[in-house]
Length: 255
Image 1 (cartoon, rainbow, N blue to C red):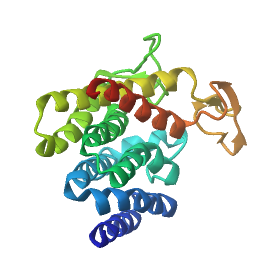
Image 2: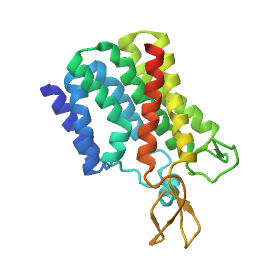
Image 3: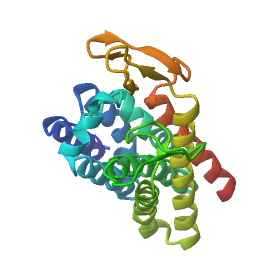
């Protein structure tokens, strides 16, 4: 437990220092990391580190090109507490349940939660760099890059890579290829669910000044007008629900 608390604080402090996380994001990462590192040891720490370190590394790839999406995406690259909990909260809860019950069979579900978060993160970080025009997941019509619910072949391949990376990081402990396949598949399904929610119910706004469609409630120093989706359904809720969805599907496959 002492090692786990120290590791969680170290990871949170370094992430804050490198501007990967805001102060609230670093504190949330510490809160999630304590049960993962403290109770789970290396077995539960490795998938989290694989997701966290590689995803943040990818956020630096093509940083100049991604800057154009700062006016579209609700939040920037420095993740806050809501983003940390949306991506890692489900895994943290599963780790806490493991700490209380000692049920090692929860580990594949834990990996699935992280795989779904990784799939969505990789799809966003690499999909926005794709040269092709994204298509809306519901109608397949062409949409501007950065549009919620827009998908590309690059994004789908990246999602598969992210989910498989987490699945393989857990494989060294569960040693079962069926589990690797199922964790990867459910992680990708979580990413697809993210796109579906983004295209249908996530709140979208339009700027009265430049007419740009955005996730932001304010744009060009003016309040934007909601044109679709539910007002409370922001990107954090979409991310969190997609992780829950992928994990629920995995539960049906493992039990």
